[in-house]
Image (cartoon, rainbow, N blue to C red; front, side, top):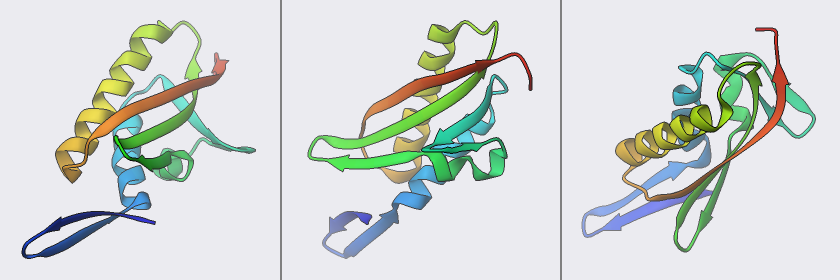
Length: 113
């Protein structure tokens, strides 16, 4: 499924994978996020984080779902707010799409990097 922008000169299609890679690039910069979880798969290779980024399109805009594994000792509420804000800003900046929600589930807290 692709997201489309239409204008008088034609259309622009942005794949879910492209949006997931943008979100993933933001997540990779945050050292405290050690993995993303996609169903049964725990993605610890930061280059493959995009495979665990959920993208949904609704009437109001784009929804991004992340299931994270974070380091123990991290102030979770602050880290997740920063992650939400950074993912939203970068996806909107690079795609021109409106991101209405960035949902983050913390599925595990670990003491090992």
